[in-house]
Length: 128
Image (cartoon, rainbow, N blue to C red; front, top):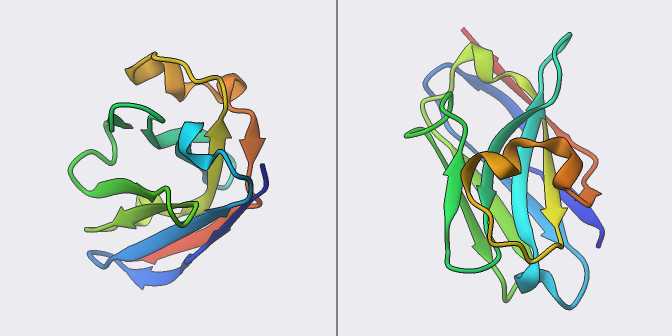
C-alpha cells in the first residue's frame, strides 16, 4: 500500500483544514487507517484512527471534538477534518495504514509499531 497525504498549509488559529490521504491497492477497505503528527522537537503522536470494520473511530484526547476522521472506501481515501485549530496543532501530519484486520479498539492504535504503511507527511502550521 502506498499512501499520499495532502491538504496541509498555513491557517490562523480557530480556522479549519481538511487533510486527505490517497491509498493505492485493491483492499483498502480492509485496512484500518490513521493519522499521526510530529511537531518540531517532539515524538510522533497518534491523532485519529478509523477501524477497517464496524465504523469505529478513535481520537487522541487533544483533538477530540475538534478533528474528525472519515474514509471513502470507493475512492481509497481517508480524510482528517480539523476545526478550531490551535497553534499547538502545528506539525507534520502523516497518514498510516494497518493491515492486520484486528478488532482492537482505542489505545491499541496509539502505538506506531502496529502500523504497516506510512505516507510522506504534510505540513500544518497554525499561526496565533
